[in-house]
Amino acid sequence: MAGLTSECSDLASLSLYDASQGLAAGEFSAVELATVLLDRIEALDSQVKSYISVTADLALQRAAAADAARSGSASHPLLGIPMAVKDVISTAGVETTCGSRMLKGYIPPYTATVVHKLNAVGAVMLGKTNTDEFAMGSSTENSAFFPTRNPWRLDRVPGGSSGGSAAAVAANLALAALGSDTGGSIRQPAAFCGVVGLKPSYGRVSRYGLVAFGSSLDQIGVFARDVQDTALVLEAIAGPDPHDSTALDGDPPPYGQRLDPDLRGLRLGIPAEYFGEGIQAEVKAAVQAAIAQMERLGADLVPISMPHTEMGLSVYYMVVTSECSANLSRFDGIRFGHSAQAGSMWDNIGATRAEGFGAEVKRRIMLGTYALSTGYYDAYYLKAQQVRTLIKRDFAQAFEKVDLIACPTTPTTAFALGERVDDPLSMYLADIFTIGANLSGNCGISLPCGFDGRGLPIGLQFMGPHMGEERLLQAAYAYEYSTDWHRRRPDLAAAPDTA
Image (cartoon, rainbow, N blue to C red; front, side, top):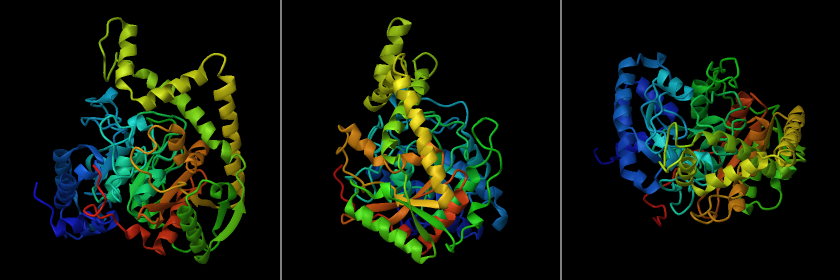
């Protein structure tokens, strides 16, 4: 492909909405836009390593089809828009690895509902993004293939497990991307990479075709450069699905058309438990400044308490490892994926799982299997589910008093590559402010609200009640509309590179 030009760089930096407007006006074609992004991936992704696979030929074919299908401003806003898909989401005919040796070379026979919906409106998939193995991690260092790097500083992690999708959007290697969020895996990397990341309510978006990690927690969501772009993608992928019994009935509202910067009357809850010890001072200051800005915009700040917050991390890792143990039992080397071919059936299963799974996945399988075993189920898994009910009650009671909750997305900015690999507890703590929305099934969004002294982004999180995406997006849009944090982009040429 041709080298990057200044025109290419300009097109690559467009928001999804602006790109859609340009396509509708005939300022450039979908093929030209896709070529720009593919050129940029070829030139720069060797630094970031956001993609596991790039589907260049398929992208250009779909871009040409989008150009042929265009009918001016009446076309869908995602028609011809280049996007990326996290590599835990099934794509028929395109390798889906889940970042694991277990599925290297696996080609799914079917396409996930979310990808089918994007294809139906003419979006263009550029490729599959890197992920912690089976979405288990907070740094995208657990990928079996390579770690992804943070575009703001290449010696820092992008967050996880959807770090590849977050980094691709931040580095202008995709206009938007899909990720999955089981305990913060969209919002945490969005905060680390300075982009918008939305976890919809459980059931708002179909999980059909998402390789399961924690089935009662998993949710597919969106990365984009701003709130309006996020709303447009959510509108395209949300809704019922006969293939997924947990997908809720009812078509999504036109989220992108209902964004309003007027916050008058909004009750914004400020939970004391999310501003305690262990928060980086710059993160706390930036989030408090953002909350003060929300008050200036018309929101009423309401102090609230979430008394069971301190139990959230323990509950989450008991529930998610148990569900992980059950879900990953299907990977046995017999039906699909890696097979060790080691003698008897039982020898083959043991050798396959030893070779195919990485250390973090093995750790979680063993923890979950132990928690579900005879004699321990009541003491661990059942007790965790009981406390989960208390956490859900905390959120329900809070939303009787407030419309949304505001807090930090993460306790710190992006940490160094390798810094926490050998300290699982420290790694898990990166998700301490995000897991509540997964345990309760509520929606949450992270958006940029500042930078620390090293130039690393800081994330502000809003959480809303179940199916409260419309109000959540409106509040996020109002804050974003009054600031310019979301307009800042990393300069890869200037980013420290220790690769």
